[in-house]
Length: 370
Image (cartoon, rainbow, N blue to C red; front, side, top):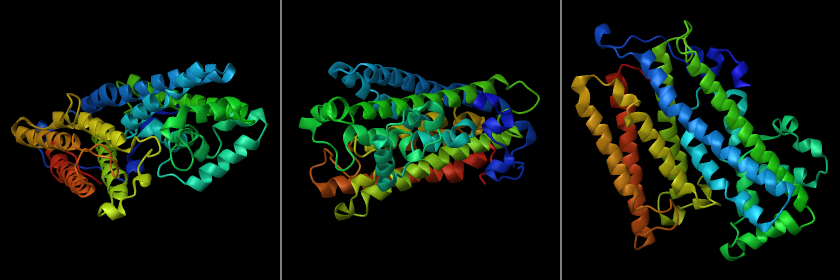
């Protein structure tokens, strides 16, 4: 459990990010207060994301448990409704990789993506065929193959393992799976085990962050061996998330042209969430950079031009994003070719933002990327 870990284990150290101590070029008197920044960033940006995740998971786990205990169409409807709120919360929190989220493989157990379809299908078939209730007990299930512990399997159980379920038959197909079929009871128990597992993971991560923040005033730094290294790690995690968005979540499913589009390679494509997940990622990154507790806070007074430059880059993204409905899928653009061309422009704008964040902002706020 995260609450049983030392503060260094909870939120990483120098060795974990492969950095040597760094003395920036800015004069010592003008250096930001990195310790204060870290406390504010953790308290106002990171922790609320995990609190939201824990709350969303708690509601879903409760609704699924109620359905599994006494199934009805109305309870099934409530149980299914949890997928989007939990996915929203997960996408909003997934960039904060330091410490509790990556400890004990929690991130991969919650949602391992890109996914291995054959492994997920095989492991689910094994669980479904078993009648051993201990397979789904919290202690044993938390050590199961990560393919069946989190959101990827839940998405398939709800939306289908192959092509997404047809909308007109969607609810009746789920009634058949969870209430009528000969393995309906086992499906319900698997559903309950996964949502309970997600809630436990989210709770552990929130506790880990809360415990570390509570020790901010201690003599030993709670985030890293030095404040500047902790700030750098926060920044690297944010930048890595932006790289994943551009290279994996957009470029791969989008392809070079309409003929090479592969929307099925997008994140959570079965549930039609690929584009929405990108929007949430970019919103979370924007909050990390531009909010009152974000990285622009570290800029000196004479570099507000750079702050405005970054704000303009995010604003451009929002304008272009409003014309994109689905990456590699449906759009309001008149033709597939126009839609694809617009999405390539959008990707170009994101890459320009990435260049600013990778090459201009770090040195201006007094950190050096590894």
